[in-house]
Length: 260
Image (cartoon, rainbow, N blue to C red; front, side, top):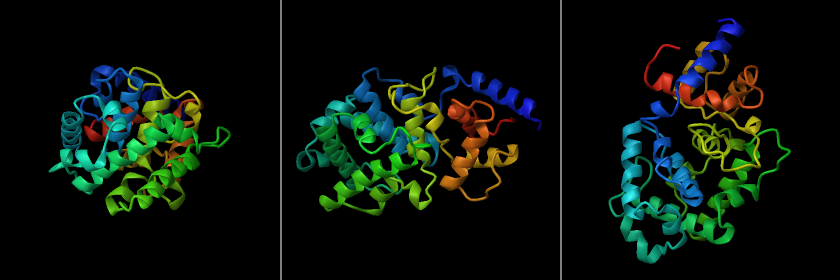
């Protein structure tokens, strides 16, 4: 496909996949909220659980909403592990046990107590002059893992929740969270102003990897951070300031088995 033809198709699909076509996607859960703190917390939770079948992802998020009664920030702020961990009895998802999920809220409580917002925690380790968000994700994950070790609650589930790009992880779920927080359009919220859209990296899952290989956006076979960077850098040929804007459309074309 020629450059101009690919550009036209990318732009067409970006505009076609607007708010009216958001479902099914974890992002639809964020749009139930208007308070900034709630959007941050439900955004991180939605991204942490964003792997596997989308209907199962939405089911676990709905179950969590029942637990925190649709007030995620206040629930996290007031969370008492000893008293409240019982609320997660029977709540589990794939690699995450009910103990993992209770400990996640324990860690979020620490984060909010120390930094007030997840944005403040992220910018504690992010350098605005970095080429992209790689180091910032590492530092964010390191904070959670270090605090989990202090609480003696580290597990394989917690490790999976907090990826490390420096170790090769494509960090799909955290890149998804950053897309929601940094970009601003009908879908994404644009709450975080100190990360440039051009610093974002596309969230690469099997759908993005497959369609990117088909379109010649990557020559790599394995889903890694290097693949995510390569796809993003190639998308910058079409929009240098906002290459990740194409993510939602490309992902849903793959998910829904549509023709590009």
